[in-house]
Structures are given as structure tokens and as C-alpha cells.
Image (cartoon, rainbow, N blue to C red):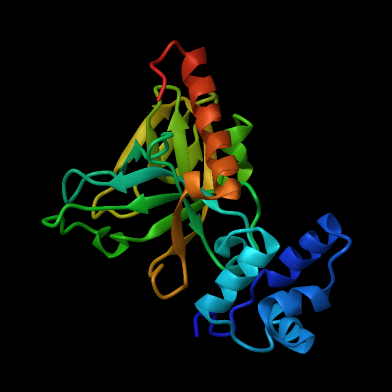
Length: 252
């Protein structure tokens, strides 16, 4: 069994299908699936597990994807790859969001629609303090990025920032008195390590880390294969290029 009693999105997809197809009913869905209506009800209310074949059957009947049934929440665009060049260096981010490579992260649960993720990838010889994050996902609130602002929830907390020089960094953010500049403190360092006089495009709070995506039922999907994922990554991609065009920078 695939679902292992994790809450699924089948009920919502059935409701959407019935709205769009008023001639259909739970009974006709059950007939097409080859089961009793009670079984469809139990599947959609998480009373019994679904196999992968069950999910594929429902997706074909309802005209949606298997991801639409498995996951309740919208996908999160994976907008950056996080890494470090040296064992004692800062985390650096590179763009992961292009039309050719765009991917999204699906997680079980209910999440705000405007979340984004970055994936940690380190070289095999990296042995620094962030080693435990190798393969993990960093989930953050994308609203401040979309709205070009420094979130108050990012101040004096672990956050992601983008500077006016188009650099992304991660750390604990402090406003500098008497200016519109900020300082960022590395949160893993034997000695204090601070970036000062930063001018920011935005700052967004980091909400959580998915340390073992394989154990949390997380899935990565190419945006080109899923309309919801394509919508999310297209939004972030257009936002990034609008910002870069405004600054006279090469487009991604």
C-alpha cells in the first residue's frame, strides 16, 4: 500500500469532477473504478489505504494527475540549490529555476500556496557544519520575495535574503540602527561571522527543513508534467526575470 493512511486529496478531486460534470455521480465513478460506492467513499475519507493502481485508476477517471490525488497542498517551486565551497564557508545559492530544469516539491499536509524550497547539495568531500543538511529541503515563505519586502518575521530569526546585488544568503538577520541596511550572522560558526551593510531586495523567514524527504513521502515532479507545478514555477520564474530586467541584468 502506498498511502499508509496519510490524508489524501481524492475527496476534493471528486468534488471538482462532479462540479464540472453534473451528469456524473459517486455511483458512476464507482462503476468506472469497478468497486462499490462505499469503497470510493472510504478511499476519499482516508478510511482505507489506496494502492498506486487505485490512484492511477482514479486519476484516469477524474482527468487529473496522480499527484493531484496524493497531495492536498500546492507544489513548492525548487528555486535554488544550496551548497558551500569550503567547510567553514557560508551557504551559497544558485538558481535552479529555468524552463528546462524547473521542478517542484510535493509534501503531505496543508501549506500556504506561496511557499518555495531550496535543496541542499554538497560535494562528497564536504565535512562542514551543514553536512547533515545534504539532500534536505529548506522551505521558506515566498510572499516577501514576491512583494519585494523585508518580512518582520525574518528579523532576528533564521531567514533567506536576497541583496540588491542579486546574492542569496542564509543566516540570522539584524537591522542596523540609523540606516536601511542589515547585518547577517552565520548561525553555524565557532567564531562570530557577520556580513554587514547589506542592502536587501527582500528577506523571508525559513519555516522548516525536510531532513528526510524519502521518509516523509515527499515527491519531486518536473513542472512540465503537472499543471499546478507549472503554474507555480512559471510565477517564480517570471518574477525573477522581471526583477533582473529592471536592473539591466541578463535574464535566466
